[in-house]
Length: 276
Image (tube, rainbow, N blue to C red; front, top):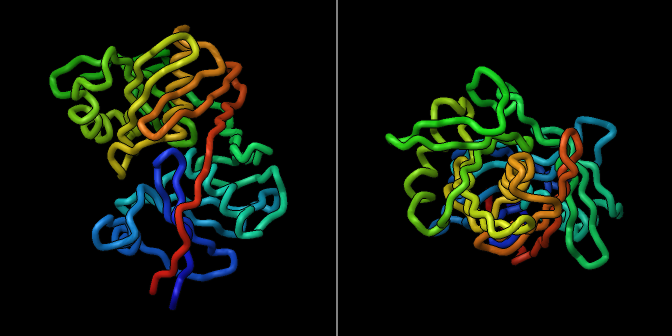
């Protein structure tokens, strides 16, 4: 059987996107790993799957698989590509699309300038919601990693994130500490590890080591988590321009239980077919 797919990226965070509304395929972690291989497969950071919703109030169900085959709750750059994909494939004519994810519902809006805005929902800080092992909620937490004492901010954007402030993003900490933070025992479902350098009150630089994918050129939920953490710390003000290796995202958050809004591009690279 030939399965049609689209290769897309959001600021260099790249995806294989498949429509399982009009097509049918049985996915497995082994198959995802084969497809994700950049030498012997298609190559991607995440596989995005469009399915019919199980919730009648939603337009679609959105599933995300990391390159290692693990299924995860949320992907912000993928959400923008998801919106562009369902419109380009004429699966919907709506400009505001309600999507069901494992991390909760999100709303995707296609702007006239082609940018995609995503209502990512409210951030969550309770340790049990992230999940993160801590006795009580705090703005930041001490965390020992490889003999170093770090101060990290933990937040869920539908998936778990920790954010560490650094003075220099090129000092080797991302490569050294990213994999260790991802697997830290205080994050029982692993974590996306963000390293943030504050430029000014509305601008940061960010690198993210993603769960199951390693460092990517951009991480949408990571950008949201970093902006939220910085605002909560009193170091940033909304809107925040998050500079990632692949480009810049704009993040807006009014604080408290308000939703986080992320705006950025979504780009189609090519169409293809693969035999399943």
